[in-house]
Amino acid sequence: METDNNQLLRFTTAGSVDDGKSTLIGRLLYDSKSIFEDQLDAIKTRSQIKGEHEVDLAMFTDGLKDEREQGITIDVAYRYFTTPKRKFIIADTPGHIQYTRNMVTGASTANAALLLIDARHGVLEQTRRHSYIASLLQIPHVIVCINKMDLVDYSEARFDEIIQEYKSIASKMMIKDVRFIPISALNGDNVVTRSKNMDWYQDAPLLHTLETLHIGSDINKIDARFPVQTVIRPQSKEFIDYRGYAGRIQSGRFKVQDEVLVMPSGFTSKIKSIDKGKESINEAFAPMSVSITLEDDIDVSRGNMIVRKNNVPKKTQEINAMICWLGNEAYQPRTKFLIQHTSNEQTAMIKDIVYKIDIETLNRLTDDNNIQMNDIARITIKTAGPLMIDEFNNNRQTGSFILVNPNTNETVAAGMCI
Image 1: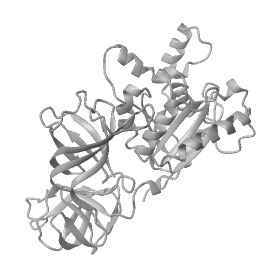
Image 2 (image 1 turned 180 degrees about the vertical axis):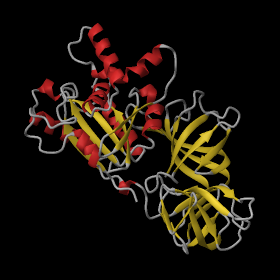
Image 3 (image 1 turned 180 degrees about the horizontal axis):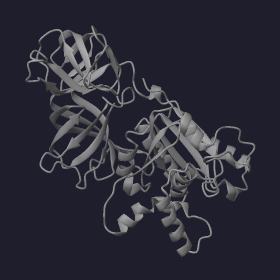
Image 4 (image 1 turned 90 degrees about the vertical axis):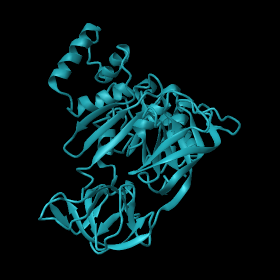
C-alpha cells in the first residue's frame, strides 16, 4: 500500500485577481528546482526584456495567458512537479465568476486547495465564493495562504486578524481541515523555506505542509465499491473457463472469499480470485484496477457494481444533487441527457430545479429556473434505469456523475449526490 511519501497529491489554487497566484506557483516550481534549464533561461531573457532585475516568477504560468491571446480556449492549466518526498499536480484554475465551471473542473479531484488572501485586503467576496466551491466539492484540506505579508510589515497581528475573519465564514461551510500560512510569494517567505522575517510563525512552510499532508484517509476505505467496466472472456485454451470482471475499485477493499452482492440484480456470490495484470493477489483496495472472478456463474455486465453484502449503496432512479452547469447553451426543460455514473450510463431528465445559488451572495434563489453556464443549482434527476449511488460527502467517487448531451456528446453538467 502506498505511503504518504510516494503518493500523488493533487491541489488546486484559488484566489482573487492580482493576489499572487501565478507568482506563488512560480516560486514553488523555482525554489523546489522543478523547472528545466531551458525554461528558466527563456524566462530570464523575457524578464530582462521587460526591464526586471529579478526573474518574474509569474511568467512560469504565462503560457496559459499567451494561449488565450491566440484564441485557444483552455479550461484548466495543469502543472506537474516532483520533490524527493512527493509528486504533485497543480490545477491552476481562473478565479473569476465567469470561470466557475473551470474551478469546479480543476478542483473536482483535488486533495487540497490553496486559497490565497491578500494580507492588505483580507477576506473578500471572492474568498467566500471559492471557499463555498471547495466546501461543495468536499476538498478534504484547505490551506489558506495569506500572501503579501511583506506589504503589511510581516505583522503577526494582521495575520491573526485574517485568521479570525476567515474562520467566521468557514464555520458556516463543510470544510474539514483548514490551515493558515503567512507568506510572501514574491520574496519566498514561508513558501519553500522558513521565513526569517516572521520568526513568530512556528509552523511549517507551504512546501513542507504539502509534502507531509496526510491524504491516505481521503479515500473512503470502508464502503467497498467495484463498478464493472468490462467482462473478460479470453479465447484461449489456458483460460477456457475464465470469466473476469475488470474495473477500478472506487473505494474500500476486497479479499478473496469475501461474500459480495452484484447490483442492481441482487445476486450474491463469493470472490474466487483477484488478478492484477498477470499476478493473482489475495486483497485489493482503492484505487487499484483489477479483475475479479466469482465462484458462481451469474450474469454480470458493464455498469453493474460489486459490493459487500452488508454494506450497499443506494439503488435509485431518482437522484437529489447539486450540479454545476458546464454547457455553453442554457438548460432547456424536458431535455433528455445521458447520465454517466462510474461505469453505468442511463438516459435521464431533470425532474425539478429546487433552487439556484447566487454565486456572488451565496443566497438560494428558489424562483429562478434559468440554468446557464457556470450556474450552481440543486436539482432532482429521474433516470431510466437504476444507479447505485452514495452521498458525495461520504464517497466522492460513487457520489459524483456527469450529464452529457447525447446529440453533441458535450458534457453539460457535473453533479454531486446529496
